[in-house]
Image 1 (cartoon, one colour):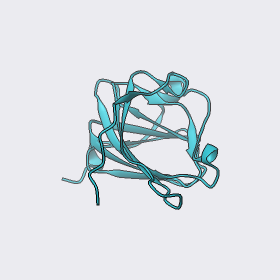
Image 2 (cartoon, one colour):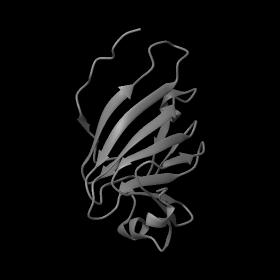
Image 3 (cartoon, helix red, strand yellow):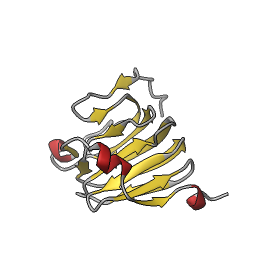
Image 4 (cartoon, one colour):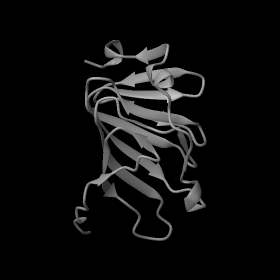
Length: 144
């Protein structure tokens, strides 16, 4: 066993994110046969990822604020602290902080067979896509 060294907080690149987003890696593979990576990701109000997908899917656990997750069919899911979203392999999606609030989530994913396929980045999310018309979740979905 060993205590993992803390790395620096990294600001995510504007090619893949709109607004201010920072990441702290929690865990990365040590051995060739390990695939799991875990990161703490913090979004400023209204900040968001570009469209993307993951070769092996992704789990996102909201720890602070209100998160918004969008799908290509226009659906937006809002999650609150303590809720976890699973995105299946290959599904295009985006994640963001709701307007007016910071949001933090823990991202968990496995590397793809080809490391370049782990996360496939696509175009930026438009303001219209971010605002959406079909919102699920919200405060009513929060377990109390």
